[in-house]
Image (cartoon, rainbow, N blue to C red):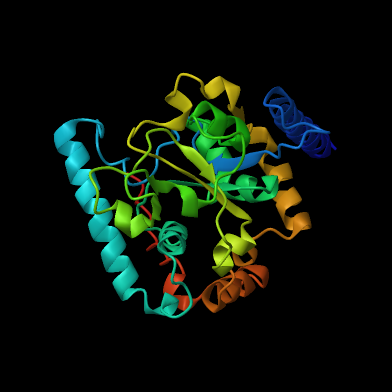
Length: 300
């Protein structure tokens, strides 16, 4: 009977924390002007560590990416990554021709870029926030909680000196002298990307991953700083922490919503992974090695 009472109390606590998290999400949406009745929809991004800053992967490996010598190194690496990826990603040849679509494919397949992933679907952000997180172990270590960032992309663009609307990537590279738009690869041949502050853009959903994740992007300009550290970020950005105690309810929600690895990464390899998980089948290659039993010690 005692165990039943403890389990019930724990479940009630988890439900209360989950409800509080959802209420905090709604509050953040309202504060950013994305609440009910607004024409502005919110974007979401999940992080397993609430201490992480919103800095694109291309810049994360450098202690101060805005210093001149490092800036040049990053710029060269960005160009090298793009040209080699576009040349070698033969699965995309004949399917994707736009430079911008190639850049989006790079981001969704793990190549470092100046992009940050966002989604229109809260559940997708929650999935990435708790992916491979052991709540009991992390809470015991007093690790930072997972979180979901909430963004008003329209307000971000207005603060970045663009119109208060989402931007098509095809119009990012405007050149006044030639009065033409540069593609992404053409911008890489210049001395800079052509704008300074992060911009919210809407991609064509040309790949299965972007479509499945309802993916959106922000793209950094020549200023290599986290979005959450820009002066005006309270106007367009909020962080909502997901309590450790709420994780069981978060996982229950994802299961009910049908959000899993295969639904977000819809290829045959991940279908096989999903089926192994669903039917509790672990391949022999990944089975843990049994620990040798220690010999009993003799009594002295």
